[in-house]
Length: 623
Image (cartoon, rainbow, N blue to C red; front, top):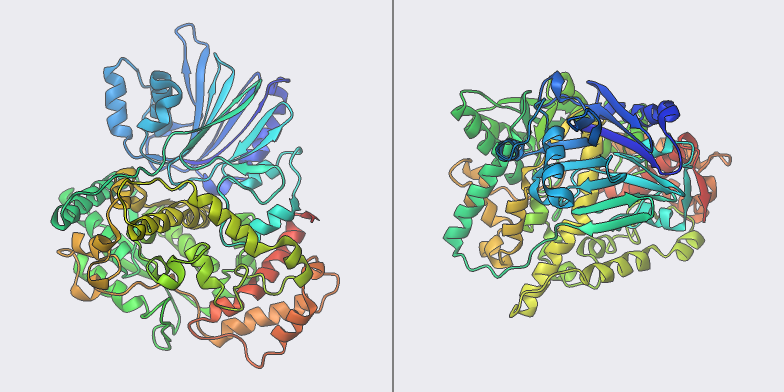
């Protein structure tokens, strides 16, 4: 668990390069504050930063298996959790494998030795890992099915560099922070292409894929994809199956030797997980701690939005916690904390790229910092529930779900502040025209559609519903999973999303849309599956997006900082700004406030982050 990094070079002995590999691992120290390990021999160097969640001091990494003669056979380093590790260990032991420790990495390594390159198909959970086969002189990089855990790489003329985050690659002298036209498109087009990186030459291992690196070259293999099957279960059976699969997923995600907490917003996703986790904990004679985030004065001055958020979280989180019986903590943030430029800089460094989400990023970062202080290093999260159960309004609103681009992009294009990509309206118009963010997103959409599996006999409506769900799971979810991982791991907290469980995702993916939305209620299938566990107000609460600051004081902070950057002709971001759009933004009488203020602030937030990024990372733009 934690952060991994490594270097393979088929033309040199890497033993003298230990300081460089340690620098790559040190860049990931936030992901693993509890320990460091390395293995360097010949052409390969693997390093690991440990976050202690499961296993004793004997669970250190990299894990190594030696021959009877004492020479290494294979080495593995892993980030994440193998949720079926207990079952795999038992199965492998029955086959004669002997274990010296109690960590997931050793289980995964023995699984590799037993089943070869097919072993990822036997792993469940969230993981990114690297295996160096000493006998074959071959590296295998593996990423979990939905891309919960990040894994990036950089090909060199004679090998490869890899790491959990781009900052690990940038710590190597061969990788420079060069950003070209495609890199900028990735920053602004809200439809990231799987496998792409922002910095030139950096790539990501695709979710559900393995990458093999040998002296002759590299190869990629897809070991998992969303399966298309005809759903024949009745509604009653479907509800019962969802309840069983989700209960099983929660149980495996609770496995740890440290307390696992629960994020509880009072929405259906987090409340369902918290209720199932508390039920499991009580059966074991233990309790559960839950946590929510709130802003000073937010509930009292709340303004609803018709599609994004109808209600504040605080009353529902409190109601759910009381009903479920958790030890609940509300993490209350004020404007001063949310407006601290130092925290905005940390949010930037966490993601290695600028973001237009501003206070949403900062509040999430501060939330995980508070969890770590409270002694919580693993937490259940409702991430991906909306993608699995079609919870987003654009998934069923014909104006967006039947558009000729991604449904969420269609929604953005209905707002001037987000058209072409969230946060790009202050970027130079000529540059935007040259980069053509809209066509970049639309071509990606067309390419993605070619991947969607078909089921014989589906109606056009059923086919389109399957396409929208596929797009949400493979193009929308990875961006948000990556953000959640980076923000949580920035403070050494592992996010655990049971809704990403393979069996649950495969089953619900094939449930017809009308069974997921009975009588027009979004996620009615999930609500029915946990109807006996939650109070009625929580059970039927409409979806609310992640909370964002509505008060003008925060908007004034953003505006003030933007004014300073815009007035500085020497600012790194100055050449990218559109003069007319900047004057118009500064000419507005009042700062953005209210329910949709975050979209209106997004472009200013992006400019501020861009300016810091260009400076701190020494980015060289080549467009």
